[in-house]
Length: 91
Image (cartoon, rainbow, N blue to C red):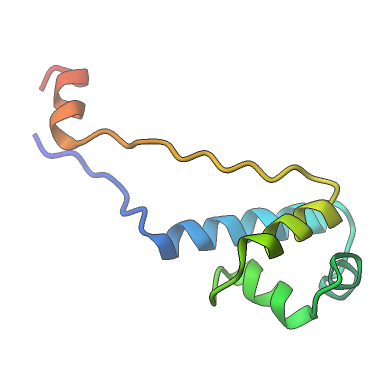
């Protein structure tokens, strides 16, 4: 049996991060402009970050998290290989 594992490439991960930032900004009741002012960065950079586009320095994500009164956590987890999944599910 073949397992369908989502392709979690860098672009997908960056889009997911951007969506999480956007949701948190909205929960905090902030516009992109207000968040940009709090974080000390231009609004177009906030737009790029929320869309998961461009080459953004890690420091920018840290500044944005601080401006959102949030913690920035990086969790690098190993995904199981197809063989490991077969062992797990007995297939």
